[in-house]
Length: 452
Image 1: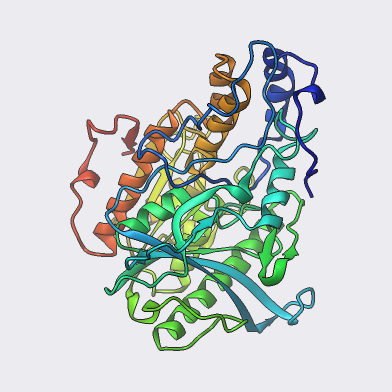
Image 2: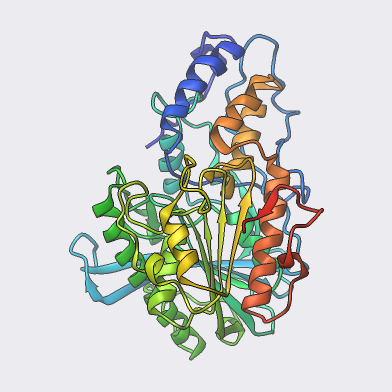
């Protein structure tokens, strides 16, 4: 767990610029460290980059190390938001490492809420998960900030806890995170979809990332590298997780309480799920899982892969079954500059994307977020920006560090573009509402390119 001692600038004797040049730049070696991020409810819709700095002015010589609370960009839709967390147990899958002896999952539902009064806003991460993720990103193998810098546990979302669901039937979207990432890693995008009228169900895949269960029970994740064998096992396990979650949503819609502790579900949840209308998306491995689950479960109308290969090892393969066969329903490949299917001679050619594209003659779309790296498809794009500016001020080297971590796309533009294209795709394929934005290149979003 992360060290909880107070952070002081006297702990680090390097100047701000030297810290950025040495520790922070060296920390890029470990930039694949997974985790999650967050931000409070007072954010401006399209300016998630800078956190408030008035309480912690940065002096000319030293970085100002302190715990940083983050701000999530405000959702763009009209709906008020609610969220609830559920503990699920799959009695059909043994897991001797869990207290129940069976596979256990934590999921969150993010939904359009009825008027919620003064109900509290959800914190971004439960406390033990927050400490574990902070520890992963700080210290000798992380970024150039001391333990305790990422104040995830005191960062708030825009969603109120356990409030009633708005009295309408809402289409459902499932979310699966990247390998070793938590279900909270894309909260900014998840909340935006919920504000547009979707119920979004985010899934923690136990034993990959740290998962906090009720009463503070923390199940640690794995530190094992993502070799082809582990990825194949993870795809199969996650696909089974997703199908189980869909089964539990059907039980909720039928009036059953599926929570392992029997907690009260938000009022109106059963009537608020429009389960004939289901989509799914994921980042990295989660995108692979979205496609693979659609291959074996026709309850999912459409899916999105955010920058995830569709094979067990990106260089050596083998191709995933879905990459070879394609899908008979709409699917969006939304890649960074580090994934492309068009030119085998380029460094970031992904044969699984090329195979998937060739296997399915219609119902598909391939977009590129030009200038981006994979973490630009997560909340890290604005969390890192807020953290560095809070601690290191406006040192120009921050731009170089951010480019190395998430790419060149300004976080505010990246967040907005992803929200608009992901929302438009699900509107068109799940709700059957045609979206002009998907017809071709838009002058509103020059950073998003249609790949032919």
